[in-house]
Length: 190
Image (cartoon, one colour):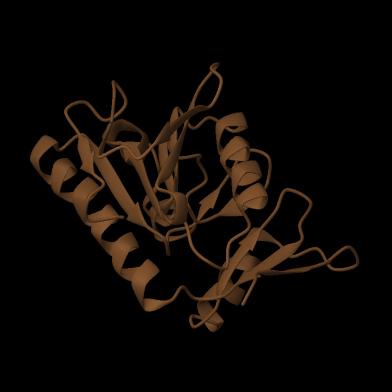
């Protein structure tokens, strides 16, 4: 099953209406691109879901030890500066950015772009569309992003102001200076 994009040119959902649509349809995963088109994404299969959970768990455990920020799973929504509403498979923001949000902002889709994002390509995802999404994150302020392609055991690393780096068959990934001290073990992801 693949994602579907609905054209909403004649209907402009407010941020509040989009949030409520997502709350009313919790069994569906929605994103909204910068043009306001609604993207309905299928749920992942068991294997991908399990790998996503393991990936998020590794980031969460590191963050629990470092206490440097907040970690979000694939159901967390972010309102990017370009107007898109996205939900990366895993994301992280520094604590000072979280604390700068109001309590109401913390309860809804966060009106910021994550500093760190991970997308784990599932069998139903388009590589090209996911690469464009990764570039959208970077264009909106993400500082470090990983696109993990399990089928080929390849990782694309996205960094601000640099060309995409492609790693073939890596066993670990470094959080660099964005997530200091974090090392993702890819053995459990592959």
